[in-house]
Length: 116
Length: 110
Image (cartoon, rainbow over all chains, first blue to last red; front, side, top):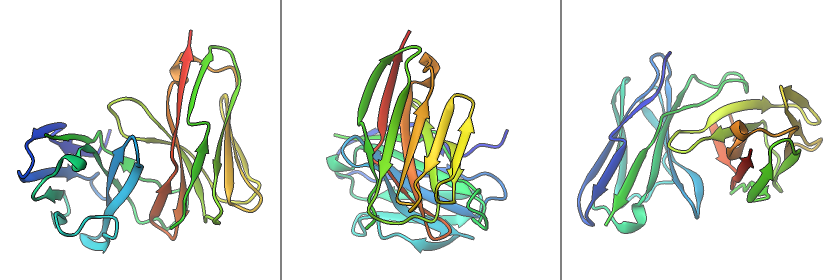
């Protein structure tokens, strides 16, 4: 049963520290998405990649956030320096290229980040 | 920026009751998806609708896409405690990007 995996599942850090979240997409999926979910803002798209190339990162605060795909099996989201307002659940999702609207995104279990 | 407003925001009902959740936008979407999210998990896709006026049924769940492709509804018949969760609609923008709605948190009591 193929799944998207994310590590760590929980992270508590202090303001100013660097945070790195990792995602392993489903093998064969060439589109990877990073989302952030908070009670106030809901689920927001931060960035997404196709074939490891960034296509859209307009939802991401550029000064402190960065997203990369070092290879097809690993996507990373880094926050440096972290701030309390970054506290949220961060989801990674992967999917095949949506040649059909029936294609879908498969979400990982998320990383719950708390910045003190 | 396209926005998707869901109503109600919260819903608490008894087992066996019927309910409807609405997803509205002023923009036209190429497709509309509904997801359910349980605590500690990511959203899981329930259905995709792509044609205006389309109706899809999934057991006790009925999904409808508005004729103008700006709104959608999810109706649950005879709700069960297992239906408890956060329901999210998501509008398709282009071929990859999804815009998620504000969410409806459903609690079904036995």
